[in-house]
Image (cartoon, rainbow, N blue to C red; front, top):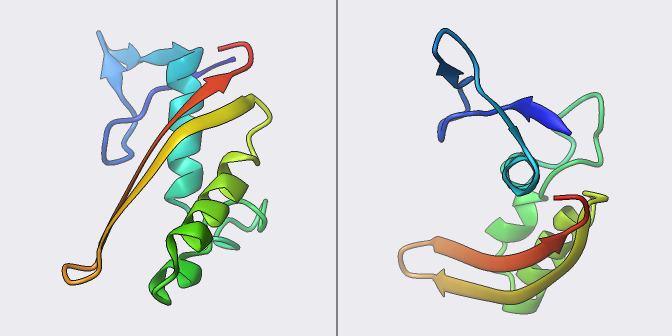
Length: 107
C-alpha cells in the first residue's frame, strides 16, 4: 500500500511540488508511529486505536508497558513478529524509551 509520507512533526511531506509517497516497511513504520502516538479513544472513527496513555502515567512496570505497546503494535495486520524489545525508563526524569524490531508482511 502507498500513502503520503509525513514529516517528523506530522505535516505532509512535499517533494518537487507534490506529495511524497512511501510504501513497504517505511509505510508500516509510519502507521505504527501514528498508532503509538495516538491516545486510546482519541480518534472517533476507531476508538480502539492507540496507546492507553493513562497506563503509562501510573508508574507501570516494564511488563505492563511491554504489554500495552505490543497490544497497539498487534492492531496492525501487517506486523508478523516483534522481537528484540527493549524498555528504558528514567523515572527521575519521567522519560520512557522503547526500542523494538519487527518483521512485517508484504513490506
